[in-house]
Length: 278
Image 1 (cartoon, rainbow, N blue to C red):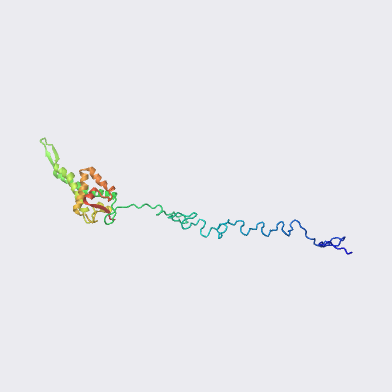
Image 2: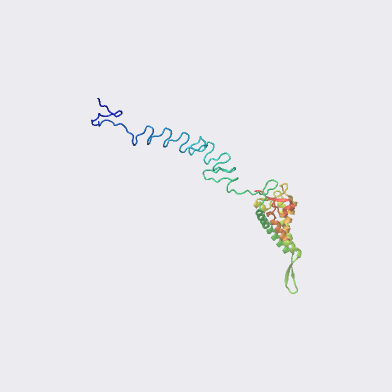
């Protein structure tokens, strides 16, 4: 009877030593995959690190737009990019986006720009003179008219002064009331009124003081010259307040500070304005 090897056991006959060059049959063990699975062998439908067909690590939940990826914004919006009406980081309506180089944003106008102040103008669009310009012009005019007034007053007083010698040989001087009033008040008053009337009422409407300050007296309606008649009236109202009634004269001089057209009371009497011409 012939000895046979156990079925499925390749190798040597019974009683013979094993062949050292023969590969032993594989046996189930550590690291060897089993037919139906084993350590490290992925399952057909799932495994470690293998995402399912409809979900996986980092996949967005159900309902999230499928046209965006991890960290990518939807197609109709962007991170920090505002939409037409609003968005994350978007500016409100009417806000002007500043320059990326640190430029100051503009809120309806240049930053730091001063507010425009309305300046009253005459019928020809010329700006009215400032109060300080009128004051300096008048100061110059008073100096101009004051020098001849003093000279003429001295002459008048000298003419009207008489010297009398008494019985004891003494002498004394006396000036007539007329000479005193005329030299001290009437003559300077008339000189100033005529000076203002003729020059302010002339074609240029400028006294020497107004020429120096670049201002002129003009008619409030037509913008032209006021004429000598109105010029004298204007000068009379201005001068009489100072010579005989100090407070009205001071009030007249200060009136342009709060008047809408920067007119003094003397301007209103002659329907005139003082404008800047240069």
